[in-house]
Image (cartoon, rainbow, N blue to C red; front, side):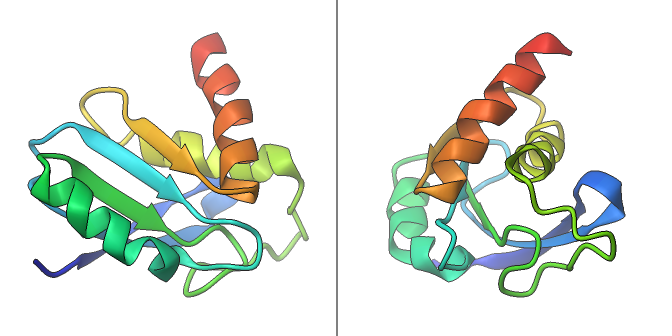
Length: 117
């Protein structure tokens, strides 16, 4: 199974790049990497999740990998969480989230933001 490259708009218009595995009709799971990584660190995990019936999406945080950089230097945790919330809203149902380090912190904060909408 190969990944499909997808792009979406994060907070403040930042272009974020992701790889997706599996059928988009399946339950979604977001894979968010740590501060010193990129979306590619989730490749093996995403493949396995897709084989198990998930739609796995691993994305590059702003300023990482192929995603865009903030012209206004917006790199506080709230901005990473906002980007994840933007991605989560693209699905027809709430996604599961797996995060490492920065990705995990953004997920926890982002969950609070989505809950308060």
